[in-house]
Structure formats: structure tokens, C-alpha cells
Image 1: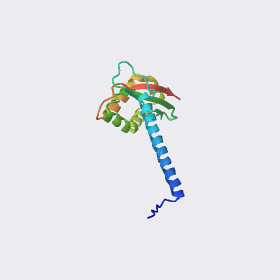
Image 2 (image 1 turned 120 degrees about the vertical axis):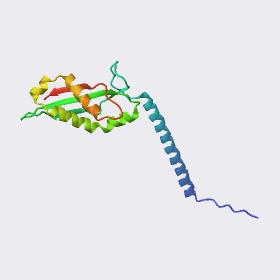
Image 3 (image 1 turned 30 degrees about the horizontal axis):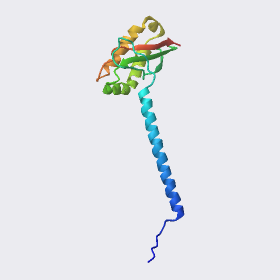
Image 4 (image 1 turned 180 degrees about the horizontal axis):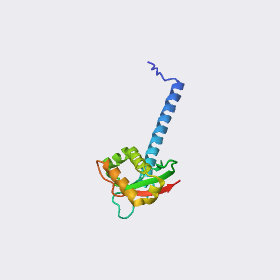
Length: 156
């Protein structure tokens, strides 16, 4: 008795092999991306150095540079940039800081925008830093900011 064996069409075999090749290629790309991402994560990014007496492990500079108009009849612009150390391992506090950025900006603008140019010239950076630190800490529930650094402070 003769046995008849059916084979798929040659075109189906070519499509099958092409699909397998695409699947292997996608798997290699995913694997290479994962290895690259893990290697890059371990290297880290360049960070601002912490002062030697500050606790924690990172500098929060998410507030950025702000332009604030003074309370003069013809206002001048005050440019200020702030940063402070925080413990990057305290994830809830870090998330609270990130969620309070808009409050930090509005509190800074409200405080400094109430002064005229003459009043700002009398204030020193330590006084401004202490007052802003007090305002920031009053809005925080999961931790407190210990130091506030004024990175940039100039009138235009």
C-alpha cells in the first residue's frame, strides 16, 4: 500500500520561517535593551555634590529657576533658583516633595513678590532662606527640609 504524505505549500513554509526569524530578532532586541538598561542604571547619573554636613543622599532642585516681579509701581524682575538636600531613600517624602513643587513656587513668588526693590536690597539671603524654609516646611507632612540653598539670586 502506498502512503501519501501531504506537505504544506512551499510559500507557507517560507512565511513560517520568516515569522520565526522575526520572533528571534524581537527577543534579541528585548534582551539587549534589558541588559543595556540595567547596566546604565548601575552607572547612575551625575549628581550635585552634597555638603559634608547635610543628611540624606540627594539634592532636590525640582523647583527650578523662577522669575518674580517685585511690588514696585514699575516692577523689576527677581531671578531665584533654590535647592535643598533630602533623603532619596525616603520614598514617601520624595514623592511629597515632587507633589508640592507648585506650592513651593507659589509660596516663593508670594513672599518675594510682596517686596519692593529697596526692601529686597535690605534683606540678606539667610533671611530669605529661613523664611522660605519655614513656609515650605509648614506644607510638608511626611518630613522636614533642614537646609535651603539659594543657587541663584539676582535682580534684572
